[in-house]
Image 1 (tube, rainbow, N blue to C red):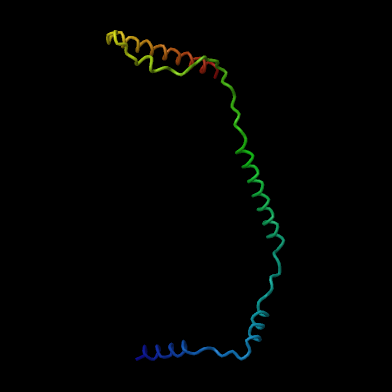
Image 2 (image 1 turned 120 degrees about the vertical axis):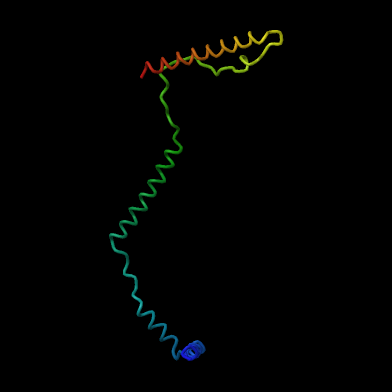
Length: 127
């Protein structure tokens, strides 16, 4: 019973439209009750200017560092090194037997290992 009574009251309230006798006076009353913005405090304004200036500085510095080419020191160890030629060690001649091919691969790898040891010993000696 209470639910029906409550529902009827809600329906009646929803069905009625408010009657405004003077809409201009209502609007003027609402606008006069709103306080105009007094302006920002000096502290807040200072922080806004500071954040703006710092963001401009960050953008400038990022642009400067991104366009700058990195400069690296030259290695103090001067080694005449070229990329190893793997194809020469892996090519098998048609007339040679397997033992000769294996020996040529071993010579190639030991020469490469000797060059690496020389390079790293020079490098370690500098530091």
